[in-house]
Amino acid sequence: MQQKIVSKREEAQHIHNGHQRASSMLSKVPEIEAYISTREYPNDIPSNEIYVDVEAQSIFVPVNGVPIPFHISMIKNTVQPDPDRNSTYLRLNFFAPGQPLGKDVVPTTTSVIEEHGHSSIFVKEMLYRSHESRRLTAAYRMIQELRKRFRQHAAKAAEEADLVAQEKLVKMRDQRIPRMSDLTMRPFISGKKTTGTLEAHTNGLRFISKKHETVDLMYENIKHSLFQPCENEVMVLIHFHLKHPVIIGRKKTHDVQFFTEVVDASVALESGKSAMYDPDEIDEEQRERHLRKKLNDIFKEFCKKVERVSKHYQHKLEFDIPYRDLGFHGVPHREMVLIQPTVHCLVNLTETPFFIVELDHVSS
Picture 1 (cartoon, rainbow, N blue to C red):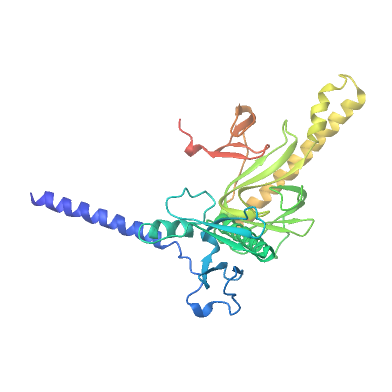
Picture 2: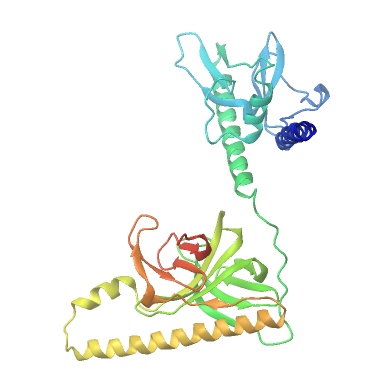
């Protein structure tokens, strides 16, 4: 009997602790607080007009001649109905309990509705009429612009929420820096193509584009390093799969690749249509084989240098090569590609989006 009582108390304590953890997780979402007090209101608020405070991301709307602030995150949308002969209208629709919340709703709005939806009164919509269309139209445009900026800022914050601060790159000065030039990077930093030079330093790699844009990859953030030679491929490449994502070209990515094309893909497709015993074609094939071997040797030597540098500075970095003869075709995304095994992963590094799955996550 005493053991049952003890087990019941432990169960109740466990449930209580679970509720406390849940409430603490909710409390981590910050409350919407545009103004701490009315003293922080702008001084030039008109009494009977809609006023947009861009700095505080709030909108003042008149209610019985008193300006009332609403944060932009609580406004669902704004609509300008068709005007009549004498008046122009502006409708403000707000987020309120009982409505389906879309995916683009920020966590603060969701938290406010979930926490106060059962105990507070929410305004669902407001309709304003004015005999002067210019002011309502100007307010409508300012609200739309503020909503656009707020959504962009919220999307950027959500994108960078799980980013881990990277250590600063320490340049290597006491010996010759291993580097490889005329490389194309994927994903692109800007434009349709990003080319530049890749260098190995004390604690990481640095890519410098021809536009002087830089991307740093720390050795400690690299989970898998892959070298794929150009055997029956149109490119030779090295690929890094990261532990924590980085921002490249305003987008978050776990994969960064550097490659050199051996032959253009369109040329490779047309090569099968040429004559069998064309002397020029035979010379071209020999030059291509020589170029493939040369590029493979350059990339392989660079990988060895990077491994030596990282080991010299107490970092563990080893390049893995896909086994093409053990590859098979599959559709990891939208099209059929060749999936090749490595020591640790199943990969397709030629087509985008890249496909990398660790063998530990594959059920036998």
